[in-house]
Length: 301
Image 1 (cartoon, rainbow, N blue to C red):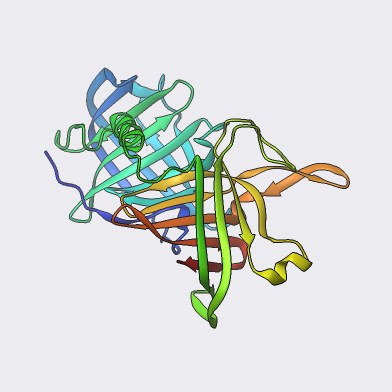
Image 2 (cartoon, rainbow, N blue to C red):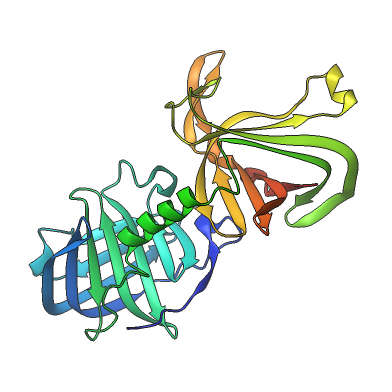
């Protein structure tokens, strides 16, 4: 079995830009996976090429040359988002919505000592995964099989009871604002704020979203002066978990419809996010991210 290079997680470039590199990959085996089972095992030559188009938000254009898999995959595929996820470089489409509305969800690139060694491509219709291997090595295994990997993550999440996001409250007495990564105005003390996260059971007031989808996040200003002008630092916003590790839970908003004087209009909810930092299975601090302004505010105990 191959051991694949590991990367510091960076979902959707939230912690910094990721260089978008084109690649060329020659595979000699392709496996087609459906519901965790291999339904085709094809030994043949597969040439996969890609290029980055700087004129369209640096999207990745992928082409695949082999007629033996034409029933399963198109000759040309487009991916618009990039992330780093532990053992892979992940290209995706509409990641926050699980690829909804896209022909192709994502593509995972696996490297060994910097050399591209394996590719997964996940498709929505039909709901299959294609695994391309080079030199008949690096066959799929439980630790990197994305279907089993996702199931295992869900199982672990359900077993962990330390942090309950269905009814989460974190009260802070100090906070620090950062702009473009630089601390601004110093540490603000004696400023009580409460981060509230609740499971979405009945939607979110002011937004057109489905009940039971994700979480509702708000921040309350508990200082006495706030009583004069209302006590919401951030009004309730719908968010979803986009990544979760032993020491960090990251939630981010998503595009939806918001109420306005002119009816419901498009709302860029993905401009907002909350990161819960954990230490010894306890909440250490929470950070509000304002992605469109490159601003974040970290709230401490």
